[in-house]
Image (cartoon, rainbow, N blue to C red):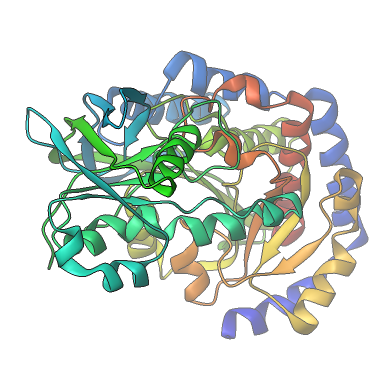
Length: 446
């Protein structure tokens, strides 16, 4: 609470010149943005960046060198991260007919036996249904969680709400099914569109339950299995997954700063996560966010702007399958005087505003001082309990926090799939997002 109390007078004292500078930042970024160029290098030249991979290590080196070339101090702060490798992933229906099933291992899954698993498929749509069926009907079976995203929520710009509901079965489904003796699980991919593109993501094994293989199959294949079961057919699936969990490796958070002129000990953090899943090159998740953060720093440096408070860029490592970068940052810097934190991890579509942890008079005061954001339609603030996974430890400690909200309509079409590539990002929209981040960071730092 003390952070919020301290934050209000900072807003009251904001000068007209700070808002004028924010206008100039937005105009300059829209005219001269290099964010897409940066994103292109991250995705096309570096590639996928799952923690422990060569791509993740290369991303740390390249982003560090870029910050250095742009003339700002940069450090690599060690983070021990998981190293999971995907391997083969194959599946077929062996009855009632021979059908190829397109699926992908859920991140962190254990492997099947070398010869694979062949078992009957039992469909459920809730954890309560697991309990109702019990071990007598689930033991030795493949449990199929059939839980599509709520498309009405997606169409009404509440895609992240729909995701939070559906993703529960990806995260906890394997252990909940293992409790009743299931041999493996498959889920309907957590996505809002599909051209037979499976969506990966992380699971969480309950240490009290056996670890069983887990995969996500495409919406088309999920609907096929559902139709067959609904007709009373006996559905049997053969599945082979060969992922491996290797020993943890050392990686790093990449941290760069533009030091404040008057109160350098007070910090406005802007952050995104540098890692991605391995199926594609992580353009929307979260290469776009990394490009926005890096471009903000480059732009302010190029414009020779020195904020009153320090603006600190943090490229977090391991948001996707462990969040260790955010946790390590909070451990290393929890006592630093953060006056605000901004995270961007929701894609690169046109900006619509920000989520925020602040409310009441403080939020009202902020809204009157962020009018420059209207130039890129980013001046709407919505109160939320969580605004970003990597800055969540700071948010929970009372740091005023913000999360950029690009238009979410198509985000989950590509999220965690092999279609998350550079062509899904529009350069002009990415520049608008960057302008919003840069202007808000400047206003908060002033």
